[in-house]
Length: 85
Image (cartoon, rainbow, N blue to C red; front, side, top):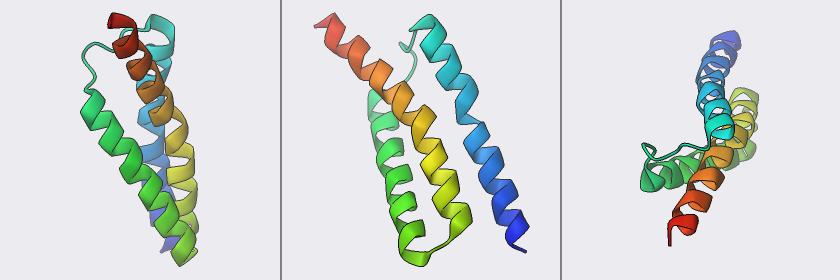
């Protein structure tokens, strides 16, 4: 049954990479909500901590890896907002 968790983790984690790659290439994050991505990154970080507490590897791995593209997008978004000021 644990393989279902790994499959779900793989799919949801993989889904963030195309957006991150596009944001890196184009630097165009105008249509991305800063509030939404801030909340998302915080939520992913909390899922990671929860996985550590529960020692649940699908949750730990998925959220640790998901933090990479989601924080990348958030960083690019924050830079673009700061640059506009």
